[in-house]
Amino acid sequence: MATTGEKLEQQIDPRRWYALAVILLPILLNSLNTYMIQVALPLIQSSLNASFTDAQLIMTCFSLSLAVTLVISGKLGDIYGRRRLLLIGVSGFTLMSMLGGFTSSSTILIVIRIVQGIAAALIQPQVLSMMQINFLSREKGLVFSIYGALLGFGFAFGLTLGGILVNWNVFSLGWRTVFFFNVPFGILVLLCLPPLQESHGNRTQKIDWTGTVFLISGLFLLVYPLSEGQKQGWSHWIWGCLILSLVLLLAFIVVEIHKQKQDDGPLVDLMIFKQRLFGVGLLSVVFIYLSMFSLFFILTYYLQFGLHFDAQATSFAFLPLGVGFFLTSLISSRVVDRWGMVVLKIGALITAGCCFLLILLLHIDARHLLHLPYILTLLVYGLGLGLVTTPLTRVVLSTIPAEEAGTASGLFNTVMYLANSLGVALSSIVFTIVLGHTLTNATMSNYVSAFSASLMLCGGLSLSAYVCLVFLFNRQNK
Image (cartoon, rainbow, N blue to C red; front, side, top):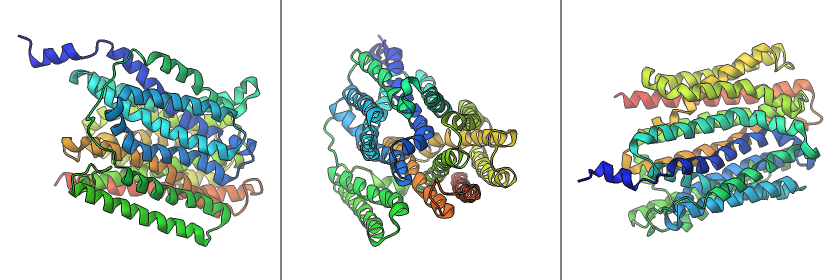
């Protein structure tokens, strides 16, 4: 008689490693695409005669649409089939990449990025679900390590690859190559998807469309005015949108609590926040990712507008940061297993310290960011970032019971991408106010002041993450 483990092993797809290679490719492309566009963004702004606000929206709308769609895309995959949703997501991402390469309007590009974010959100939950169900327990450690390393690779080298592609200027396409780069890979994935087995989850569950509308509307009216207010001034309609966003988000909470009490399939099970440590852990995620994405965005603009670096030189400035992050991402799990959760707190303190050290370096030498002091500081920043962000998922999710892991995982990813949108918006507000001029009219001293103020914000956010982590681990140990 075959044991239960033997029966399970017989049911496992023998082509699962082929499937893993196929489904991880769009994850890598999305990661690379995010950071390639980061480097190319100032060139996109100049080429399309876009405003600083429009450039922010090109970044934030992608992350925002991705974040809110993540909440329901996992359920859509369970109901309609994970391979089918993956096929739709990859098709949409590839098509939007092609259209993004052809567009000559910043407004159209913003719309394209919104749709591309929705497509990316359809991909990620299906990949994670397929990884979870297609592999044996003893294989999952390796599988998720490969997944984490791939994300680290995309972060570490996406910025560099973007600068190289733009600098090569193949067929005089300039920044458009960062969009066209995705097309052949997307087509390759689409050709490889058909042999994959279809899988479903609970096909009887319902989608909470009311909660979805409240959440999307509330978050959009929160992020959009923060960007638009810098261009049009903080007029009454801006404040009206911000107040309305809070009302809609409050309505979302009320609706979700009511649906939970009625057992009517809420979009987000807010009862998970009864686990207080999870709320604190999620707050630490908000602060550290706000800090990280703020630094990336503002550093790019300081390099390209303040110092007039081209895209390739910008990517070289990011390279030590990316290498540091990649190195500690690979070993962070083993380091945490050996030294404990103090590693995350050290990582948060390192990122904060490096932000403050960069301010000091700016006032010593504001122009030579490819010299050794800056290279070492950004390398150490990347090392610290890998120590705190990579293990944070496991640490935060470990604060909740296993039966709530799905809800917690969805919230974690949603909050992470929302931090991207809000980080860009908040740091841009600080940068714009202190700069006091347009990007083209500002002097070098204006840029140094604006970048220093933004770095102060980034450092403060990292310190806030550290405080949350201290509280989290102190409570866990009681």
